[in-house]
Each structure stands twice: as structure tokens, then as C-alpha cells.
Amino acid sequence: SQTIHQWPATLVQPVGSPLSLECTVEGTSNPNLYWYRQAAGRGLQLLFYSVGIGQISSEVPQNLSASRPQDRQFILSSKKLLLSDSGFYLCAWSGPTSYNEQFFGPGTRLTVL
Amino acid sequence: AQKVTQAQTEISVVEKEDVTLDCVYETRDTTYYLFWYKQPPSGELVFLIRRNSFDEQNEISGRYSWNFQKSTSSFNFTITASQVVDSAVYFCALRRTTDSWGKLQFGAGTQVVVTP
Image (cartoon, rainbow over all chains, first blue to last red; front, side):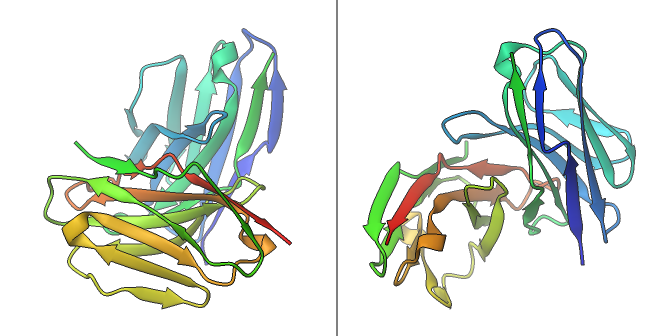
């Protein structure tokens, strides 16, 4: 069966510090991968998605970036965090076909102080 | 443009009551997929159901049931005999069949609070 991991689970970082969040998927190959952010108030915002190694698409311009160095690894990064980057970050994967549902990881709760 | 509206921000019920969550969507596509997810306090989104636009058959799974009506662009979700463990935020989402990478358009979510 497939599983998705995210770490760290929680993170407190000062403004201006770098960020690296990691997501890995097990039990599947060539998944579509996604990063979402959920700010206080519940709304889910799609940040990045990837359909393959090295293929990243961005949904919103911001100081975050994503990379996919391996088939089942998806990394969210920032060189300098802003207060507005605080939130709950969720990674998700889906199969390659259009009807596949997305399965979400446990999330990382980021607080920028 | 795609849009999903969950007009109910929060619903509070007492255990064993039924609760119905509304979801109304907008799309110009003739084929699409609809989803429901549950987000318990732990934060992880849990997939509940996927419905294809060409299949309007309603579905029941245990205490959960879904009523899909294409004519009114609605995909409502009912929890029968609610339990405290049903307390969560529930999201409705829409996906275009033409999007090979599968972008989900989420609604704002409905918070369900079940008290004993």
C-alpha cells in the first residue's frame, strides 16, 4: 500500500531564516505530487505541483520554491521566511490519470516568528 | 472558471443527530470529478469519496451518504447518527477531467462539531 511522509511535523523559525520541508511517497511510482498551504481559517491553497522529476509548476508567485530530485521526493524551500509564510503545509500525491484522487500527508505546521 | 461553494461555515449537532453538508459547484466542463475530504483536528486530509459527473447514482457508505444532482450542481454529504469522532472540517472539491495533473478546486470547508 502507498504511504506518504512529511517532516518535520512542526517547525518554529525566525523571520529571514531558510526553510526546507520534505515529502516522500512509498509504494507507488511516477506519482503526481503537490504542495498545499492552509493558513488559519481553513482555506487550502495549491502552491506547487509536479508530474515528474525536475518538473515543477507554480500556482502562486511567492518566496517559496519546490524541487523534485527523485521520483517520490518533493521538497519545499525558502531562502528567507516571511511572517506570512506561517501555516500548515500539506503534501499530497495522486496517480497519473485524471480521475485519481489525491492522498495527503500528515502535514507540517510552520510558525514564523 | 471553476468554483466550489460550501456556504455553511460551521454546523453544531448533538450526537446521534443527522447532519447534511452542502456543496454547490460551478464549471463549464461537461465532465468532471467531485470529491469530499475530511480534516480531523490532527490536520491530515482524509479522502472520503470521488464521484464522476456522468454517474449520478447516490452512494451510501456506512453512516455516510452522498447526494449528487447534476441539474442543480450540488454534491451534498450526509452523516447519519453523528458521533463525536465525526467532528472535523469537511471539504468538497472539483477536478477537471482535462487536467492531467489533477488540480483540485476546494471549497472553503464546513466545520462540523458533534457534542455528546
